[in-house]
Length: 488
Image 1 (tube, one colour):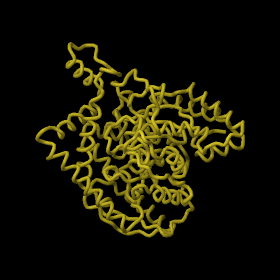
Image 2: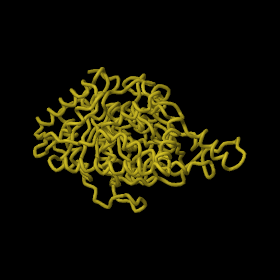
Image 3: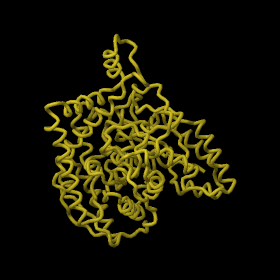
Image 4: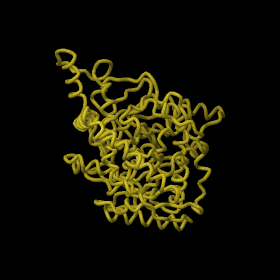
């Protein structure tokens, strides 16, 4: 059988029935990845031989009658800022050239223990800093729906790999929208869980108080299965939450009776949002009501400060986290330097791209003496106000419905010369990271042939409600069934 665009459930059925083997499925995925590299460029590296060996072991487990996890034998891709023992990790940056990880990230380790097959590392904006996957040392990833447009970022490679039918699921990281925005641009499902729900151990840090690992898939159910496997407490991550992980899909039954959805006024009145995008989201809200949900208007008054707050905090933390990349212990080292100080300077100038350098400079500035209180401390105070807005809103509703992005996928080069315009791509997603709440993006229509994303935000540690609402919507609609190149 052809495994292109198959869901995890469909692949599992094919394996259980004997219509396909894990080796056949994994081989098919690798061949699609290789064939699409010149056009889409979703991957930085493939582990073809290792994945086939893993697939053979998965087939042997199945043949022996061993009790299997739901992801056993399922191919998955990981974003290239999550380490895997014996494999390179680049964060799409020159500064990590030659680095091979001695250990495996917890989220990846949990996939491996569940029997999932890691087929490769996906392209991304360098060190996850970007909204278009144009800021990669290895070149951009292209949107499978239109190769002249970006797939979003920074997890653009993972989103494109799922959207192109290469893999049924992939991991990404989300610091200010880096899973949800590319999911919207590529017409797939993407979830950022609650901060601390998934361990960050082995995730190369961008902004430690904002980063969170999540998943891409074709359906909400598939996304829930992946999140369930990678979630849970990890003693190696001090921010990991010691809370039980629900069986998310147990609540998926199609109706939304008893669910109240909040509609944030500020998200539908923001400047610069495409009216056709809003129309698609409003149509989806009508579908939620048909499924039994009640809707109420809510207010998040500090939304207008979210982008400024986010970029102050994120860049400050980035400047601190990236100080470790200095050419001394691993990765790129300048060959043309006289003395230690010059080696630091030249190594970092050669190794980091323009966008990363910009953010390091901005972050260092806001942390410097004389500016810390005016910028970083003030941003943390506003962050508290943003979080309080969500707490008040959730007193009257179970989840929030918003657009994921103010527009559909934009063309390459449209925003690279104007960083502020690029940063505004995160206007609907960054607040959730500041507040630490879960969010999922699902496709809800198309504008000009390109996917539109709808975002569902939940209470802390309540991934279940957004996923349940997303699943109910997908049972009643077919937007998630269309893919790049499909006929309607």
